[in-house]
Amino acid sequence: MKALVVFYSYSENGDTAVISKRLAEAIGADTERLELAAPYPDDYDKVLEMSKQEVESGATPAIKPLKHDPKEYDLIAIGTPTWWCSMAPAVLTFMRSTDFSGKTVLPYTTHGGQTGNTVDDIRKNAPGAKVLSGHKFRLDAYGAESHATPDEDIEKWISAVKGFVGK
Image 1 (cartoon, rainbow, N blue to C red):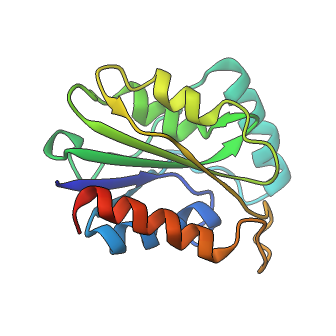
Image 2: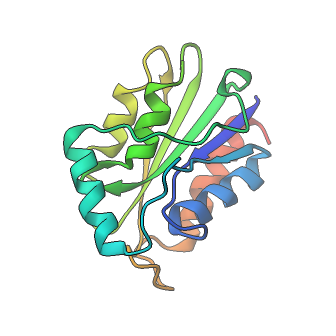
């Protein structure tokens, strides 16, 4: 099964990025970090304000072209932080611009305490796909060293995915 891990992370080494890279390495998947065409400002408070407006309005900000073509993959794992009870707007842009017909989609989200509808929103935006049960990782929104989801639980999930893809 050819796999692609697609994710959005505000920072290069944010929680979603770290889990996504670990997953991709374990299952031998290609990795695609979604990047906005016009990046968010460095001021995190401004990012919070902007992202809230985008999520509430259903905005789909422009993203940079992908390096990998999702058409070439059987499994697409989609990782996103939970922003305002849904997926990050860049992920919504990806979802709405991708044909998921015949694909298997594996959603997962990182959150600081509220998961909202993130996994269901991914499911709704993947028409024609077989969407697997989503996983929700409770982590610290500000990059603390300790997480509410124990590392052993993250590894257990990665091992289960690894078994699913046959790696």
